[in-house]
Length: 440
Image (cartoon, rainbow, N blue to C red):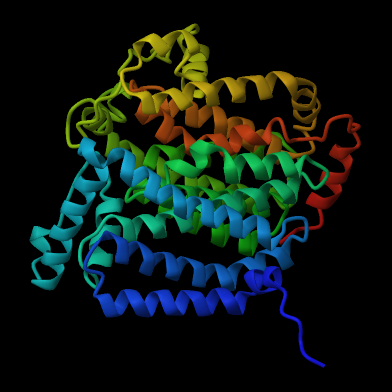
C-alpha cells in the first residue's frame, strides 16, 4: 500500500524547510552572493533553517500558538524586506549608510587596524558592526542583513508573546499575537539593515527575562534579562534604561516572590543602563537624546524627504500627556494635509486603528489595570510604555516616529489584551497563583 503525501504536511515539515533552506543556501554560495537577490535568498534560507529548528520548539513550549502561524509571520517579514528595499532605495536611506560603514569596519578588521573602526558617541553603531561582521564573509549587500534582521524581529515578537502568556494565561492571546506579529508597522520596519530587528529581539528577550524574574525564577530570569538589556543598551541605551526603570517600579509596587533578589537584579540593570545612557546623551538636554537620529531623518545621512513637526516638550504638566499622545498616535488625521510622502499615509490609518482598539477595549484595560497589586506584569507593561514614550518624545519626524515606536508598541498592546472581553476579575487571583509557582 503506497504512502500518501499530503502537501500541507510537507509544507509544515521542519525537514522540508531544512531541505529547501539547504538548496537555497547552496545556490547562493555557488553564485557567490554577487548581488542583492542572491544575498537575500541565501540569508533567507539561513533564517528559514533556523525557523525549522526553533518553531517546533516554540510550539511545544506554548501549545496555544501553531507552527503555521509562526511560519506565516516569518514569511511575511521576509517579504517585507523586499517591499522596504523597493520603496526606500531611491531616497538614500539609512541602510545605505549602514552598508557603507559596515564595509569600512570589515576592511579595518581584515587589515588589523582597530584605529580605523567606526566610533560614535551619540549613535551607538550597532547596525554598522552587525553589517561589518557579515561583510567579513560576504560581499556588502543590504538585503542579506535585512533578512537576518527580519528573522530576529520575529524571535523578538515571540519573546514578547511568551512574556505576555506567562502573566496573562487567561488574557486575550489571540489579539496580542495578531498585533505583535502582524500589525503592518511591526512587520515593515524591521525588514532592513538597521537596528529595529535587533532592538525587537533584545527588548523582547529582556522582557521575557523580567517576566520570569517577577515569577521568582531567578536564575533564568536574571540570565535572559541581563543578556537582553545588554543588547538593547548596545543599540539604544535610553530604551534599555526605560525598561529597567519599569522593572524596578514593578518589583517595588507589586507582590513579587523572592522580592529581594529580584530587586538586586533590576537595580543592577538600572544602574548599568543609567550610566551608559548618561554618557551617551552627554547630559546636554533631554531634547538631544535623539539628536543624531533626527539630523539624519531631517536631511543628514538618511536624507529622507519626509514630514517634520515640532514635538511637544514633555517636561511640563501639560507637555507630558501631550508627548505620550503624540508618540502613540501621530500623525493625526488632520495632519494628512502636511504629509509630503505618500508612504507616510498608512501610519495615519494605523494610528486610528490603535486608538479605536484602545477605546473599544477600555473596559478590559480597566479590569486589567485593577490587577496591579497582584500582577507585576501589569505595572511593567504600563510603566515601560510610558517610559519608552517619554524617551521617544523628542522625535519630530513622522517616518522616524513610526519606525522607532515599534519598540514601544509591544508594551502598549498588552493593555487591551490583559483580559478577554467579558472575563471576570478572578484572573488576578489566577495569575498571582501562577506567579508564585515560577515559570518557563
